[in-house]
Length: 77
Image 1: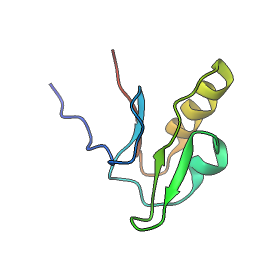
Image 2: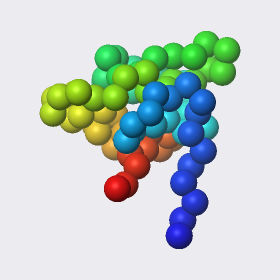
Image 3: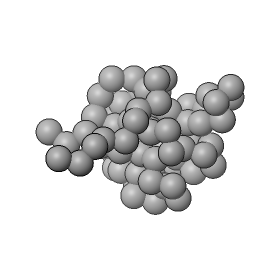
Image 4: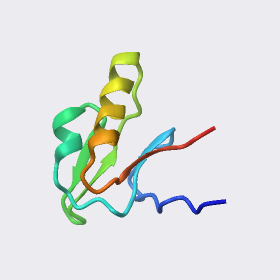
């Protein structure tokens, strides 16, 4: 089984998370600002709120698909 990327500690519990590959580019924060916040000390973004609606989930999914460093992940159930 493949190893999961390491989650950043600020992620809230849930199916989406940002891993340590994040380089702080801000793409996710522009696409889904209600779901991602910036952590200035580490220069990374993290999931601050899991999506609550289908539209929000689509925005987070879009951010995940287009993340330039593939740092956004969804836990497969």
